[in-house]
Length: 491
Image (cartoon, rainbow, N blue to C red; front, side, top):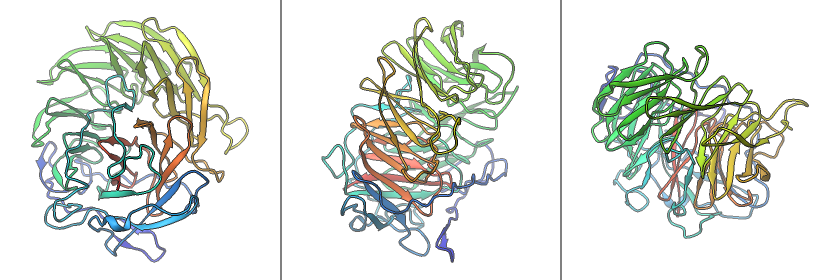
């Protein structure tokens, strides 16, 4: 990519030897076009003018290109965030270079310290969709669990496709979707392999027992060898494509929700259908729009017709249904016998996991940045940690709610200059810090206890951060809707 005359960045995709065949794996880097030959244009960037300093209590780093081509190997000496609170520190961003090693962020093959990364094997870390990594350490290179300086981008990749979903990270490898399924080595930032799919991968992959499971907009569910990228099986949803539900894998079964309001159970080893069960009503586009939670033999399934269903993993028998009365139900979180779920009707609900009885409701309120009477809708999934439910809202507020009674603990407007900057991705709680992305091109780190902003990382060259950040072993991984992918760390 090169700088245009107006100072904005024009991104080009990296070299790729993909052959365009669906189901073909390769070891090169990524063009980013879908396997069917289509190319998705990124959604319009919200008008923003917030590249100045932030308020008291945090640091602000914005990305700036280090060279004309936009790619530089890591240079840790130029990436420290330091200075007075409220200042705007410009730094050079180390992004993936383009040598013959396949796009390594470091030609010498180094990383922050070369250690293997731990694991975030699925959406929101676990089958209960808690979004909580309780044992996560601070960012690498710092002993401070709430760092306000020394934050840097360890490496970056330009994948060339929208990244609306966060990655899975297992054993030092990042698995991320977009126009194809990719495996990226954390230590080198180079691609281990790329796998072409029928339709985009707009959900978080699931990695279980050496297999990567992914669902696509082309109506396919894939099982791919995590090491080699070789296809093990694929299953085609024939009735209606456009899968928006990531695979949920447990006890040898892969579960996936479909746009025509069904939950399908597949044998995780062979891809053969074990059973399917109706969820709700008639066919509706994106009928099951988000990941079910699975706890103690029960699947908690959201729908785009405003209902939440509890289904048995033994044949899909329905145990109860809860009707929110809203249009959209996000992925639920389950903890200590309660299901927490947010909806497009600016509500968060707590429901008894055994009976489906409502325990409490919370309203995110009216949108203060738009006009009177406009609700602060929620499309973000919840995260639950240490007695608190965290959820992002459509006007850029991040809410912290008591899990016990639904009272507000704190609320933080991520951008304080009066602009609407939507939070649609789910928060991640790790090491006492909440990480969340926003449509104002920033990723934020906040104190989980009181909402104090530790730092934000933004980009004048970037696009919306619509996906959920993933914190693993001292890194925070996140992607932009213009196809850029980043590994943030400390030190």
